[in-house]
Length: 213
Length: 247
Image (cartoon, rainbow over all chains, first blue to last red; front, side):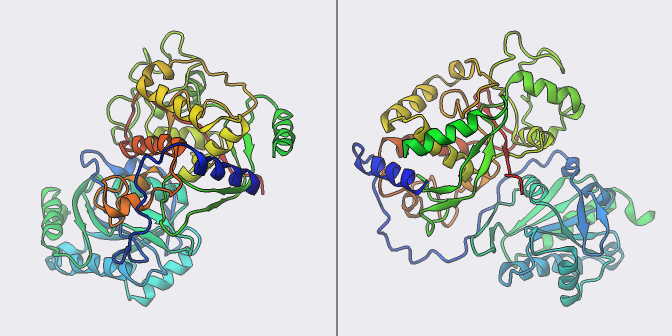
């Protein structure tokens, strides 16, 4: 196979006129090791709970995303061994939660979904939740299969890529879902203001009369 | 090299009709670098459908999976034109049985492959298989580029060509429809630090230095991919499935 590929590259090298400039000698001083992907725009009219893949929570429970139906959800995608952006994303979700009026807090779920099928087992995620002192009543960390992770990321507009070193390049995005699983608010970036997300959550809870149940 | 290839094609031919073909492990140099530090991608062996999925095959799938029928698909999984040309939920357009199915979103293509015990090929797998196919067919760069540009200049006509679903070797890679890949979203890079298509510094850095007819043609395929949304259901975009090797 190597020979074939060598032959192929010889063909490439010897063929016609170069039609694009080669800028590979540029000095990409501002390119860091890790890439932050910009999030994609998404469909906000329809529920992401049509995804029927199975997930394992850090508590060991098996569930589908439709389990969260009926409550507004703050969702973000992370991976456990990530020490840079991910703890900030988790903290951003917590900041949203902490900024809610006290009575509203118990109506909101915080769901962190891992990119990392191999390393972020439910047990590893349980350790993560414990390490950051994140209670099971509010927080759910989800482990899933690659195919389900990709589908969910696509509907949330989160782009990611597994790197050769096992880490992930990804978009930094916190999303608010309404009681039906529709995307209503998106906070892109790290350590952003939480006001809009908080307002969106309060509105969902008020409009669905969740406090009076 | 050719001796080795002919041994391989005998192995492939020995399989039953409509079996996926084995794409042997190897290395390839992508025409567009997804990671600017990785110029040679090492690929494990995998299996790939010899031909794109046909209308007849897709009809069988929706007959068994009603939630993927034209009138039943969840709105979030398509752009409104899913299987639009089908006269009914379980009826393909007249005389389309043996053509490559199109008007299928990324979500639907994945569901089809999942039902076959497979998955969509990754972008690397598809491009690697494309290189492998060119070698297998002994196609020159020029012939390959001409084939792609012919299709691009009249994509709808090309998508209407007959597909032999029982073909025993890899076929129709470049002259019927463009095909979905699992991780095409990696190309949706408007505004990224390392922008692929917007003409920034990071963009052109990801062209290969040895840039000829073939890689120029290949670049157009990447560019098409970058225009798709996961809900896209265009009439020139089909798919084929990939499968892991048995462990």
